[in-house]
Length: 484
Image (cartoon, rainbow, N blue to C red; front, side):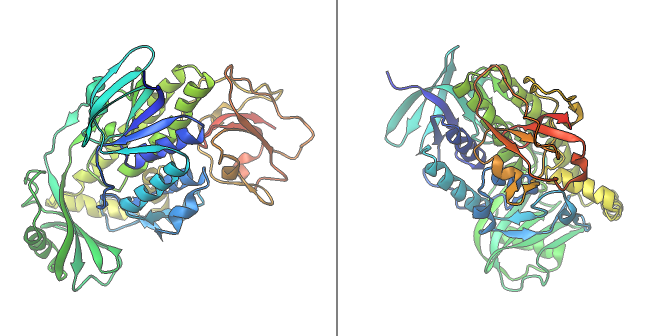
């Protein structure tokens, strides 16, 4: 009988690749199965948001991506005239990183292979059966068929997820009612500003430089929004809509990629069915407003990776996996709500244009702008206390800290918080001036590797005054905190 995999990840996009990296880092035998034979060259997503960059920094990988991308200090909400100011956010990465999805995937696959992940391309999953001990998966390749058995299977295989369908997880929501189009093209007369957004009674156009000589044009055209999502976009169609809405076609020619996309919106009823779990677009799909889909998928994988590794390797209770759906499905719900609101603001009626003008004015208020920037950048995500035992400490616990995301603070002259989390382990962190008191013990009831560290000197953050220490989760959120 073939050897049983510990985890099989289905889907080789950013979500599946990052999950495979997290599992392999923890010593899990994981293989990744992707139906496409070649890596995708087109890039539907173009940006990494602040929390995604923090996720990469939590494993010491941020420089690989920063070297290939271009920081932009602002983001947008529904292409409103007032941009979101990311420069004021509480993070080492107060910007969006402009980086085509194809590059992101290539860098993640490079990391996965470094960690020993077997990436099986050209593998299409067709049947899935699970029992109390594992999951049997069968499918086809260009050469024939394949069969595997794994203790757990994760579907990161996109909006049309075979894993989700075969596991019987409902995917309620709404069908496509509007479509838009995009094209990666050469412009003979590009706009003078780096990024152009136009919204008027004729529709909306966004123009963004992709690479030397290549721009992306995204068009929402009321006259073409009923075109079926599978109807191919032509250069002439894109040119005519752009000219009518923007007053210029910017010398559009030489299309590299043309695509139509819709506003189908769905959220998986649950993210776990026994030994099968979902992440990324397999769990949530929406109109691609604000560039959030890829980023939320990476963050799903970060949340799931250490929990699944703890169950597989350390014998943690499977109930820990239920916390994945409990923590991340509300994030999916918020994502749906957010993108529905943006979609509504992308209309061309007089009422919608008036609402856009009103909201754009409101976003000039710094507090409101910051709140929405935190939301788009996923820095406002926090969790309820996780059901794991607290450390044994003589000081009172601080439940208000539980689940809070931590930014990358300095812990001494040459130590930062995220560097201590690079191995993907729990971190028992001592804070405060008294370094003579021993750190408390933590006994979760199942084996777990824990890094122990005491900050040297005062940590330069006022909100940490009175905190004596923390148990930090592998994903950079607080597990428990106690008073000084």
